[in-house]
Image (cartoon, rainbow, N blue to C red):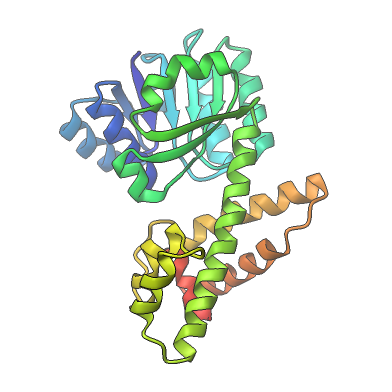
Length: 282
């Protein structure tokens, strides 16, 4: 199966690299041409100047962009030229309803769609160790599974189109809670003049240990917030969660608090920092 990649951002770049190294990636498109040029030179793939041109040449298309509107713009573009029986795998984080709309539009062209958002951050994308939650036809998933296994170590079929994005929304809400808990707890430790490095070491090995504390704790107490997952992107995702919760009649007060906190950080110019920058407000 020959694959193409649309979107070479922070996540897409690592994903594309792993697909290329496994011999699956043949084509790339990115809105910023300089990224495509550098990547194509390093990995011997073809650059296309539009999603439509790429869609006409490959049978599997991966998408990794930031927002619902971006995804739908790309879907409408590739629908003009997509080959019948092609498979489009969207790795972005978008609303479940948007994923369902994309699937319906592509079905009219006899193409299949999987909403396959991922978790694991830039590190996971680079190492090929992402967790992937998939919505769509299980038979289609099995067809592309060899490609997915080059970018993710845990691939779970959640259910029909839209359910992958539903599961990702759960992930983003949980990430907000973990961020709040870890940053608040470390601020509490700091207020007691405890040795923060030792606190992180011992708690990481106990029942309260978690990935975020282990991988972000030491940098946040040093005031370093190099992005693995940007505040502005998590804010975008949590606003989406608020929309989905309103539609479903659910209450997510912790998300509401985190959205407010992130807006404060963005107003202070920290939107492009890692979400551990929440420590600044504690």
